[in-house]
Amino acid sequence: MYFDSVVEKLIKGRFELKCPRMELRTFPDKKTIVFEGPGRIWFNDLGQMSFSMLDSIDKDKSGLKFQWIGKIFAFRQGRYLGAEDDIYLQLCAWDLENIQWISLYLIPHISLPQSNNFELMGEIRGLQSVIKPFISEDVHQAQFIILKPPRLPLTMSTSTNILRDGKEIRSKHETNYQKISLDSLDVEFELFRDKELLKCKVKAKEGARLVNNISVLIVEALRFMICRPVVPACYSQKHRDREVIQIEGNIRSNWKSQMYPPLMQKETEDFSNKWNIFKTYLFYLLKKANDIATYSPIGFQYFRVMEASTASLDVFMINLTVTIEGLLNICDRTKKLCSKKSIDLADNLDQYLHKWPDYERHKKRLEGWIGNLKSPSAKDILYSLLEKGIVSKREIDVWDEYRQSGAHGKSLMKEDISGIDESIAIITGLLHKIVLYEIQYQGKYTSYSEEGHPNKEFK
Image (cartoon, rainbow, N blue to C red; front, side, top):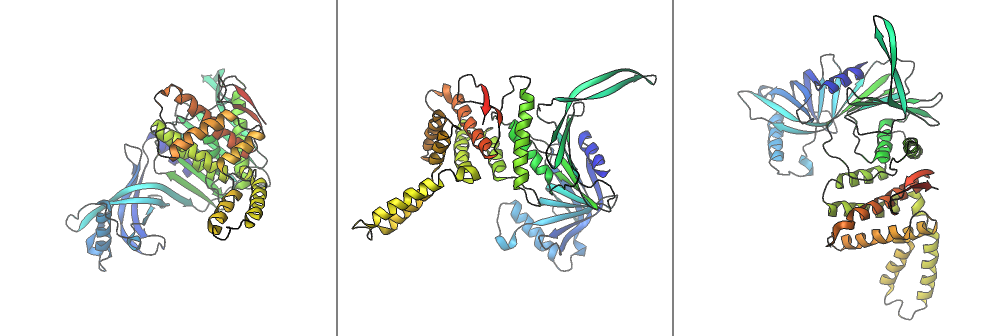
């Protein structure tokens, strides 16, 4: 299988595609070939996918190459040329096995022409290939790999037979496996410690099918469970008569999230409880997914907070508090909490104010005020969650204190910063509770607002 050969090259750090034919085309029409020639695609020492190709000015009868050379030079020097002159090219390349590869996004560089030849270089943010024809009885499956994966709460094991002179001496058992079953699919994780590789396989159950880009949903659920920036290096999915392979443009994640996970591992059974969070979150994503899966709004918000956690405490706290406000307004269940109550209150006030003698004089301002009342604030929604016993008063107070300071441009750092870690933990716990409520999770979670951060039951 071609995917396995790509994985093997990535593991050894020797991924390279030698391409006798490469083209840079205008995008999105893909009709005009601007540059063409032989070249290669590889990963540089920083783990960034790069490309290089040679072209000749002799072929440029229309002057199109000269126009684009000027555009690329201007772009590299920071001069934006306007929307009509955007530097947006797509790379199409054919390797030695005549398999076509297409870039999802690239940033072009160019060398000064030497004689009649010049070199085009650049960074590729993603590379995709469609392999046809594809023949298999089982076309409803996908897989992806993660290089140097973070620690996972694996609870199952695989066994390896140790042989000598063709005879079995003993069996070696290693906890490096996890299988999760949902109504429509099975997800299997296997960790290869010697290769520093995590492999995931997704298989549809009988009578079911996988949505396109199913790996995106698996990765998002994995990120939420462990609160780490999991990035797949390569993934594939089978579609009837073909297999789609995609390679990420950056295979090294050089930053680590400082976020607390929804559940801290304190007892042996907490490993299984963490996978219960994964399963519930993935089930939620599958219900929301259309034919082509993309990261959910929750997933985008979480990834942004993970990135912010590596910056200053000010930046981390502002992102935490703002993200909570954003989630309260995008999650379906939280949006509905105050709707009827707020609308009834606004309607009653509107009827009362209509009788006020000066109503017409202040009509525009009052209409705006009434309109705002019909849309509950984040604080209103949090108090509705408090009434349901989902969040605590302490969590709301700590969030509100830092949200107000951040909104008015004040530093979130106090003179005594000894309690900042506790505040971060409390607000992070509040963030997790909102999502757990949205996905209708039931099971263990960590209560960061209580002393000692005990694991409790979320209902």
